[in-house]
Image (cartoon, rainbow, N blue to C red; front, side, top):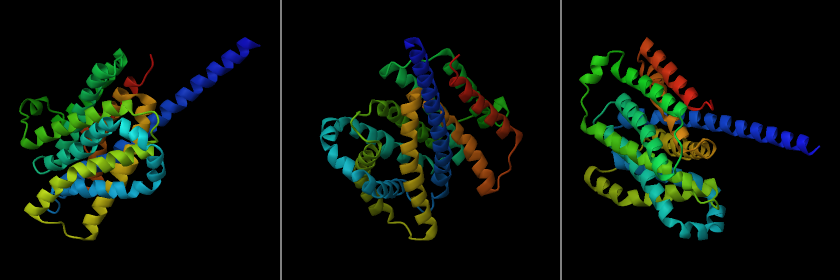
Length: 312
């Protein structure tokens, strides 16, 4: 009888774990789908909204939206926040203040596809390495193989199917900014795994958004003094709302849930889907033509993700 109960318990545990993995994968894919629009916006508003201003309004909007849902948790968990303030400060600086601001600065110098490819190709590798060094996460052979396949798909997209294009590739000022953004997000990805256990996910986001916004404020004032404010119109307001609600509140929440279910290094691999989604969005919204390279790259990236998430 005891053996039957033990076997049943083990099967239930396995089924629960599998459900958590599938949910984590679903959250990671959805987050990358929404995030992919961030790179297009970064390039599309360079003539209308300055980078720090765009980042500041994005996070102000996100903080205001999430505040009513987080306030009761914030009051209840204020002691934990004070005890782990340096943790929250680091996640705010890397995940909010630096990451997206660097992306928006890079948008003034590089194309949207360059932003997506360089940022999402390098950040997962950095995240896996940092997770190994600081979190002691194992890097199984299948995960390494999957990562290599993902990178091949990204490089295929970058080279447009011609290897000689990679040999002649030159890094621009924007490329260096996006690499700095990728490193910032890799640090965030690794740090957030150590989130205090007594912190509600909504409260965690509220604190990180609020601190990140406060850190950006003096830089926003400096930019405002130099370039002036933004024009209030439907396009600009829609852009800020999309960034504040979609790519901030929704994406960060489900991305952190994915990290909790899959682990930091494993979740980071899904970032390779962003340039693929960005290409599809370019077809839908910018009228660009889809070519076989896009399809082959998509297949490679998805195959790499599947390989990286296999058990054996």
